[in-house]
Amino acid sequence: MSEETETPRERANARIEPISTRVRDTTITALKAIFPDKSTAASYAIEGLLVQYRRALAEVRGRLTPGEARLILDALNGGMLLQAEHPELAGQHVRLEVADAISLNRADEKHGVDAEHLRATLAGFTSFQLVALELWAGAFWASDLINDEAYLAAHVALLSGAPAP
Image (cartoon, rainbow, N blue to C red; front, side, top):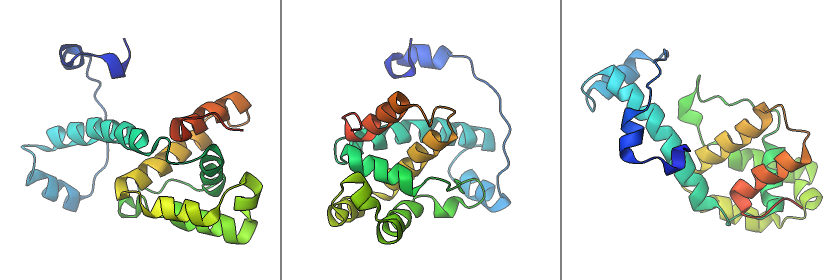
């Protein structure tokens, strides 16, 4: 059964895999004010991130054209996700990288995109929707299938709701 169709009981009975992570002392102190212990905080953060990521992608689905989604992928190509080292910058890269790709590389022309419309659309996204875009692009570029046109079309469709041209 997929994670999206699991019942709450199935989810609660699912195998829990232990992981280890490094978190700044200041973050732990702040989390202890919210959660009873750091294990609960970490579980909530990791499980919650995935839920929020999927929700944010669902919220933006259809608000971007296939060309705009491809432009975002293009703009974030080669960019390393810095969330692990600089989580305070999460979501800050998309608009800047898109602006650079348009002004320096004419990516809007390459992908048949109205640059002003894309800028306005991105300006209307929440901070977490922008984080989700960065994670979405990072997942694409981390894949071994980046040269597979079918994979690209499917990845673009996650945002646009339509296959890439």
